[in-house]
Length: 347
Ligand SMILES: C[S@@+](CC[C@H](N)C(=O)[O-])C[C@H]1O[C@@H](n2cnc3c(N)ncnc32)[C@H](O)[C@@H]1O
Image (cartoon, rainbow, N blue to C red):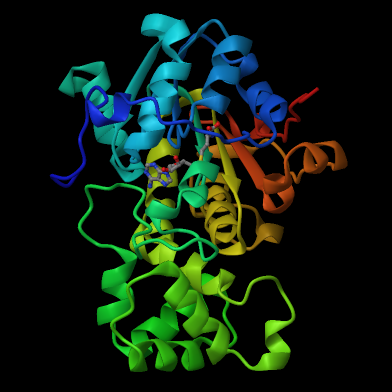
């Protein structure tokens, strides 16, 4: 864990009464994955305002919850919301790739290292509505603000540094990789020629004019993909996701569950690949001959394919439009013959 990530109780600034207006996606469905777990510790690795955490704690009185977030505003909001659960809840300000250290610190003793100890982990990836809605956070192309985009305001790298210092090729590459931006090269060239760029709206206008007029009329706001790519780069979102999922799976007790909610294809691909790798244990034997390499499956899929929002959820919460939910259950120590798929009743 780097020095700028704090582990411990929320900071004073996080305790302020800033409003936190975020509608949790697929609340009932998510709580159902955790409802029947045995007594133990669940980690909510993306605590946000604590909406999912609250639903899990209400649905499953046998569970304790360790909430992680790197945003002091989220930590403040979740601390207030989850106070009703007293010592069933611990909240930590950290980046989720420190999950193993955070869990170990919570358990207080070093001899728990590498010992599975969790009954559940939840990842509700990406940004919260308050992060997007507050102009001063710099995530929104619609409102004027500084080019910030940091989830953790104690991290040194901001979107302004990326926009104003990365070489054109590097900018184009990240717009392509993280934003699927067709006009990545044109946008990168325009950005480099108009530096320094200080505000979100300044950047949005540069992106808009760099895109051919005919393309501007399709696919939402012309700066949407650029802002997504910059946000992902600023927060290393995809760079740390795969290894964090691996850590989470390794921390699970047999029967423990890991649930991940993704909001764009890059995220979902990483979740799908890591879950699949854990399901096969890395086995590459041709299926028709059966496994001879001795790879050990770590999980089974709770459902093949991703769950999407239904019509009622879409109506209730437009943010759910892009959600893809995947879930696995730890099968460590279970004989192969018992590794059938199981379905979760999310009613
Ligand atoms: C979609 S919101 C979660 C909302 C939450 N489920 C709720 O019900 O309020 C995602 C949260 O995860 C946090 N987050 C994203 N990536 C993170 C990371 N790598 N480490 C820690 N927190 C992260 C963000 O700061 C944000 O508060």
